[in-house]
Image (tube, rainbow, N blue to C red):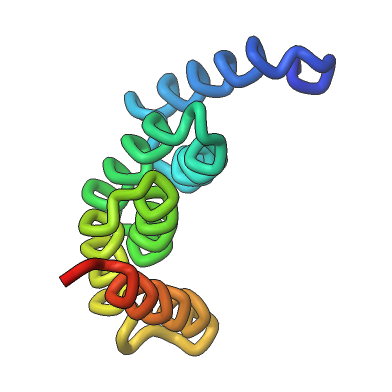
Length: 122
């Protein structure tokens, strides 16, 4: 409610508390993963977003490919090429035989791996 009133700091705090209340960790469900994605896009809160995404990718079976894709994006933005590479490789493995609607995620991870390989000094 506070977010709607313009108080985004208190609103984010309330959202975190509510997510923790429904599952013990803000990364246990899709809204938790989406919250991790939101935080990972904010440079000053990226580390918290990465923790949520990493937890979600490892401990939650639903949308795991998507979780690893978001984790790869966040780690790449943070400059962690090796961590991003590992996350993107998980996406390729998990979505290799996925339904066509998930193909875009697979293609994005594949392109990111190629980009990282070109940027990484040998």
